[in-house]
Image 1 (cartoon, rainbow, N blue to C red):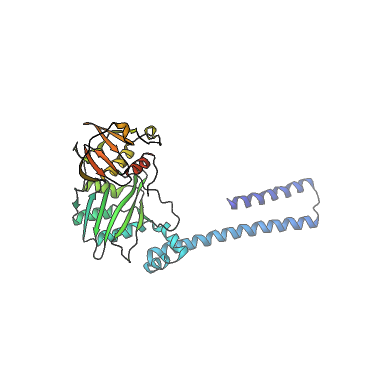
Image 2: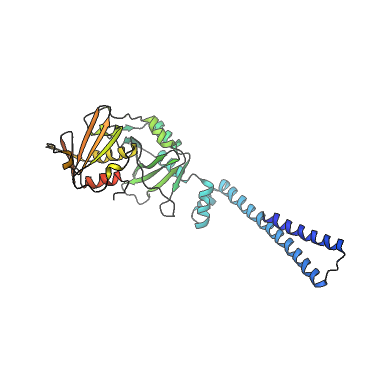
Length: 331
């Protein structure tokens, strides 16, 4: 574009001289000298622009060829502040390389759906290789370089986790988000390992998640009298009672929110206590879960709740449920 502007400016000057010739107008020596100086400057800037562009293109070509031909250069470039960042753009597989190394050196791997912890699957060698192949578009996202890491979202059922056993450590892969635009998952060393750091991985697709769904399909629980039944709820209604001030009943409850609240309830510890029910308005919050089998009510108090006649203990459960309904984070 700059070259076009320079050419246009030179063409305008040529037209100016043609008009002067037709008009037979004498040009003062001083003006003629300044015009010729201007033309010389235009040509000099154009030549400089062409030479600079050619030099940048040559350096870029050398950089790309060096990455492909000289492995030592790639290792050297990764350690340099500027070249290291540039390398991320050309490689595009930083997460892929590290994940492939983890899967390749795995002594064993287990998939466990967090929503259904009683179901686990130990993976065979060829299945671990399938997970490695599913990371072809993985890109490592460092936490400390200003990337816009998304806030954790409600992960779809059954919330897969991959536990990988290495020679000197264990790795846990856990998802932060899964959506149509891609997914983010964390690679967490367990226990803490000085040679490994937790990092985030972005996938433009959901290949790893989809591969897990193929290797270990998990159906929603069919039980109608256990806490698991709340995971497969068609709709949820919030009834506010004693001391409620948040107008929770007006907040829409979509599938993700229902799943999030059901998971909070599943974390509670059941007790042997039996509870008689008071009128609904005596409880701060009552949740009505509607499923094919009918309505299930959960009576929420400050640090416990009643479900199916049983008392479940959970610290600040009322606060956590309230914030989940309002889409507010809880630390």
